[in-house]
Amino acid sequence: MKKKVVKILLVMSVGMNAYWLVKHYAFDRMYDPDEKEQIILNEMIQRTIESKDYQEIAKTKDIKSIESSMDKNKGGRYPYYFNVSVRTTEGTYLFGCSDEQCTDIEKYGEAYSIYQDEKPRLPLE
Image (cartoon, rainbow, N blue to C red; front, side):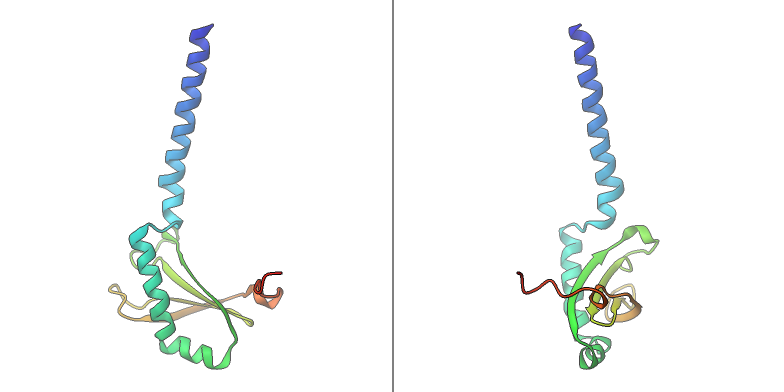
């Protein structure tokens, strides 16, 4: 009886550890930046704010938020899987590196904005 319980616990332990390893290496690392990647994303936000495309948007639109993200799963290679989203009341503007050295940030697309249907989250109630 004791051997059976030990075997069951061993199988459960190995199974849970395998699950966490696969989850970490196959999924989380694709979307969650490590320390080096987070620094790159933070610098990209600053470069986005300094870019000509952002300045043109800032003149005419009401900017609500800026968000950085990383998606290694979309097929791009370094540094093209880094993104900065600038959310306004009318839409979301997507920014990314213009070349492999990321010497310049450029707007490469637009998307839907949550602020079309919802109020801003701040100030807190």
